[in-house]
Length: 292
Figure 1 (cartoon, rainbow, N blue to C red):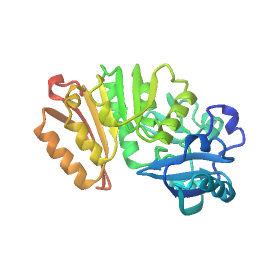
Figure 2: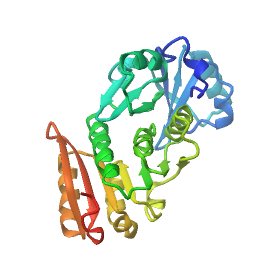
Figure 3: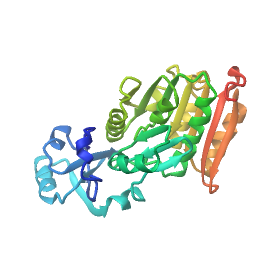
């Protein structure tokens, strides 16, 4: 992962060509620290995706020799834009202006009136702000926080930390951001430092289900449907003044909507992007019109 040191971005986008090695097994953290050109390791379900900024065939071969429990399944070479799905650029979404750190100077010259800037280095983690669910979540955050009484935030499945940063930039006093993936948690922590929000946002690696019962005024969960089902059925879900649920495809959104309609909550607004991706903003009935 890149450091939060601004000097790292003086030569522009630090992510050009990506060399990705897909392995079965978990790579020891001690081994990662010795790898040249290493950008990060995305671990999931017992598999590892090692990202490098330069070819690393020799390094990976040495790693496999030292760790016989690992096996190389495949390797890929692509441009950073191909991995993220689009070139990194400054985005204006409502009151938010999301900017990669290597474009800050140009963005400031083009938009000096920006009131809620967010510096975001997504690294090799998905979550640049371009996805429909992220855009809808940012709009929902703006609505929820502007309604008032939203001092504390619980962001489950934080990814790059973008939504946690948006909530705090909007005026929330403190936020706990959680992600099970180590690389996502590291990326979010880096972005918290880039935005000088260390005193307001705490990033933790962990299971969303283990944190849902913590008190918070606003719950943000842009997360896998399987986890979402557990979250909305927990006792802690109904203690949140407002909630934003996203990352849901059509059939998943229907199941969540059906459950919410039977629960003591009120859906304040729903977003649908191309009829595929869905986002809900709501409030527990016990809080009355707190979401308005």
